[in-house]
Image (cartoon, rainbow, N blue to C red):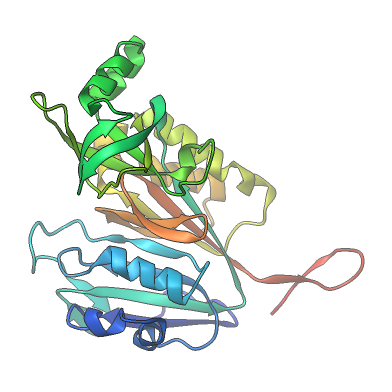
Length: 318
């Protein structure tokens, strides 16, 4: 069954099995061989079984082997333990590992990662941490820092905190004034009232910079609309992919179809959109690829164009 075609574009599938990671991740040549692609890819799409895939190492291998090429997709959210997720590719089913598509040829790809958060409090340096437990921010316990930030909030932001407090980790340490899209958003899973320590869903090292964030339906919608607004001045894409967090459904918006409604309005009803509800969304920040939380990752696919005459008229390269 064929669900879509793009002229002059090669799409090839690959599978990274959990037993193959040790060999495929040891160097760039091994990883390229495992992916099985020749030439220069424009995009990778991956769907990940979380209990068997070392996703940090896999994304690092993509960055090393195919620098600057976006990797998008998501982590399966259905199964709560190993063996409960199923991945499909061609005529095969897998209970572990990662399936993916490599896209090459005459195609232009644009990736939008919407964090949809509002910053809370100042930018801070982690001064003491072990693993995913932060003991000090700027020499003070995270609990005390948070209490000081909460004391300055208005009633609306207090309600946002009650709906979920997040921690943003600056993806690139050299940025002087990082904006919202420069942070990796992570869930805070514990604040120890006796020690003041904070536990988050990522490893954090001393010297990294972080900031508290909050999110509600309005800020998530506003951010996605803003990031998609330039599409009004571009030709509509051939197709779009949407990978959205399972925490951004009715639990966030209070209604179904929150993200897909915004994307459809921005791209038009004639643009086919497919996607995946994830327990972690994959997409680039700058030139590197990351796993995100509570985000919407949108991929826009267009045919490659070239300038053919001095008047600047665009001509289809096909």
